[in-house]
Length: 535
Image (cartoon, rainbow, N blue to C red; front, side, top):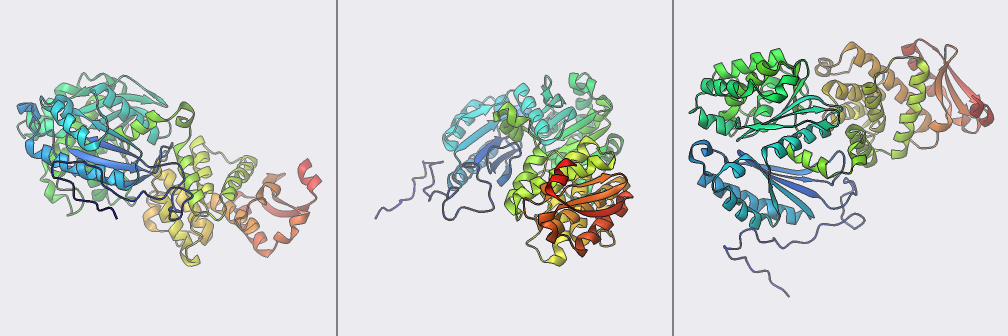
């Protein structure tokens, strides 16, 4: 029998012996995972934090299966000493040892390690990176400012549908700014306006920090093109700032990605954070203790960005350099995929009774919508498609709670490429699909996000889903043969004669409810296959 002896203390970062995790197709492989190869991981050695994220695989909409952060503060004092803080270095090494062991345990095949401003700016950065490389047993890319800006832009492009504005990624050591439009990123810039760097340069004076930020941002090239567009805020400090705003406003959906605040309102909030003792505004768990000291500096920089660039709104992006790196690894065809539809398809595969039925439901709904003449934006169409794909994910729940559970899963899912109102539309439509078209049971909190248009569209889609599921019992092969469409002022459902037994009172009742929503008379027609094909 072989005995595994403890590694000597000098073998920091040595591989942890462990059994290989089961692979797709093997006994013990998690059925709640998409089979897309071994996990892929990133380690981001930032100026304030060191973070490991392990993803299920390299896809257009990657799902994190493990995420851990250690606030080390590597960049503290660099602006004056030009060297990494020794205590922070020790803490970072310890974090990297654990992260490498976690990667070994989880069967990670490809590990990408990035280092940002602290490592590139410090005089002893090269020595730190050399030791970190030994621990990680992987190459480490020390990002230039422009490269960091581009990867941040890719993260936003990956996480938003047709992003349009300027990305600002505020870390501990620097701020990167870069223009984005659709799938294109402009030429980025970097400036030493990270939270730790600014705290040091301003001698811990927030007002002085604001003046420094103003001087450095008033001529920033990307901000010249920001007026009346969106500013995408990336980075832990700005996420913490937005989280505090969310708590102060009593906002009902606690999802940071896509959280949008009008620029004028965010400017007023930043001024409040700069002026007031933060402890009077923050609950015990709202912002981590490690982020709290930098909150006012983040507010100072963001307020100067708003004043210099005059954006329409500030939108929080939970995706940045790490996700941008993964996006850069994809081929061009995969990059062009819709991340929302990709994620919805994966959830459909994992949780639906028949994933193929979800795909058929999507196309079945297309014919219905085009025949009604109801106007539908491109965004609403893709959100409807995603809602159809996830319409059966709640089937394992108790019937009394399927609507509520489906709403909660969809509203809080790790989706990107959709804003909060789009999430609400998808979630409420599936709530109606289970509980009926009366909104008496709908949470008053979700109503705070839902507009009249959202509720109307969600009710129509919910009615459509109710007809589709009672007709097909969630099984494939039925909907393509039984088109639902509006013709000559009537809502028609054509059921082939060999499927006549599927028609019944419950189907008629649901047809009637949907017809009322669109102002038509409902008819269920039993047709011969040749008749259906001709029409």
